Length: 266
Image: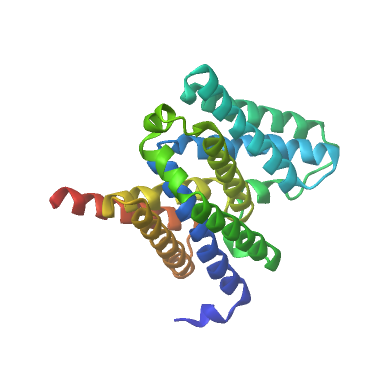
């Protein structure tokens, strides 16, 4: 039954799934508690603009996607805070503009871009040692960020108005949070794809919110649920011969549904 563990590709998938769960669990908790879940989707689709530009000018696609996504996230944050504009409208606009820019530059790029869809939709079963190191580096950045800025994140998530009244600088830490979200989204997209990234950044954290009221508790539960969904989904998809990403998402959704029912019955 466990013969699949002897395969190197499956070992890599398990390892990168667990590593991805750390970053997704932590950043996803901040996203859900701050009620900015749509930003992860917008950044994910805006990254396509960076990919298109990178392919056209011939430099590293991940670098292009990262720069474009971070600038997009910062643009949303600055405009929404400075002008009091509707953040949802800005997110929707950035979503559409990013995809449009990407499509135009991909169209203008000579020849066939063979690995374009691997950056957009990923495949956790095709991860490489380089991908593992990339996600491990992301985990270090996310862990250091949450340790150093934990109290500031706590303040802007639960009591932003009090921070503003007491002259605590909300904008810089909010922009840093958006940059961290953008970096996490871009790195994980390359490994697991857009749909799974959005799911891992929302479903485990939403479930964790039903199980704990503290930020630390929510982060811990979110990482655990994300890791469980990923590992169980990998095994289940292999034995059922189903696509891995959708199985992981369905498992995460079932865990959320079970937690929601349990929460309602308490």
